[in-house]
Amino acid sequence: METIGPDELKYLANAQSTGCGIERTLTVLDGKWTTLIVRELLTGPKRFGEIRAALGTPSAKTLTDRLRSLEHQAILTRTVHAEVPPRVVYALTEHGTSLSSVLHAMLIWGEQHPLPPERR
Amino acid sequence: METIGPDELKYLANAQSTGCGIERTLTVLDGKWTTLIVRELLTGPKRFGEIRAALGTPSAKTLTDRLRSLEHQAILTRTVHAEVPPRVVYALTEHGTSLSSVLHAMLIWGEQHPLPPERR
DNA sequence: TAATATTGTTTCCCTATGGAAACCATTGGC
DNA sequence: GCCAATGGTTTCCATAGGGAAACAATATTA
Image (tube, rainbow over all chains, first blue to last red; front, side):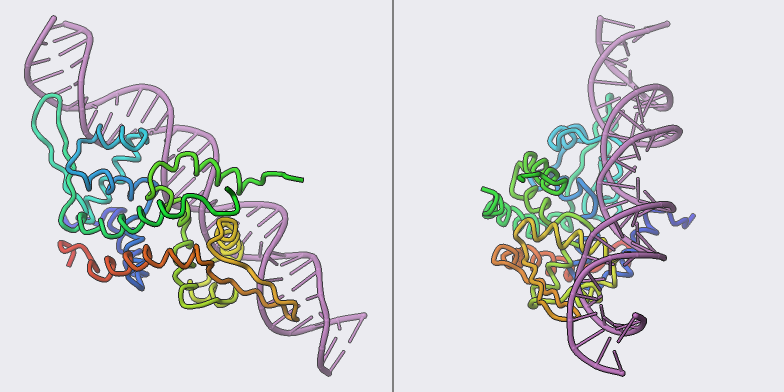
């Protein structure tokens, strides 16, 4: 069945309006936790619970949604190990790893501009 | 009166949770249009109407909100020219201009990854 | 037979975001 | 006096994002 889910529809709709590369990147790094998830995985594959704890425990639903979206966009892979209790590991793809350039630029800027001068 | 508006409250609340530089940058580039506004101004100062048109005409309220937020964070300046009809020019500060490194990384990534491979 | 551990899914709900439309302020020109 | 042009502000409203809590699935272990 070649059904198109709401996720795909949203993705394609966004892709349409993706004029420049910046907008394209913003489409991928969309949502409250997305960028931070990538940051966590840049240091290596991690389990669901590990990611959740590292981000300050967002709701399970939210984290699931974000991970699914990133998986659909081939930013990361999801591997289920048939154990009990189950172990699910998320790892960046080459695609996802290449986002490190963007994250790195964000890190540098953020560190060099801790607070607006007039508020210190 | 040293009143603290909702904008400042939100800003400080966010600043508290600003663990790493990435989160700090995400706090600044928050909201649907923020990053694109910076992109527009990187090519030079622009008027309210010019920015609005370039972004595909978001609502005036939304654009005003975003511009105010960026102004409060010293990313840009707002200059009112006492003419009739009035002319208001927005320009990046040094602070704001330095965001070009982040935007540039986004641009490069977006251009090099137009669409996920499995969807082509 | 139950309890446990892990990673979800599902339902419901609250809030923030952002959009539409109406209105305001200014002043030179008709 | 009235209109036009620009850059707003204000009010109201629809939607989407995200949170809490309950439930599901599973096999080992007690």
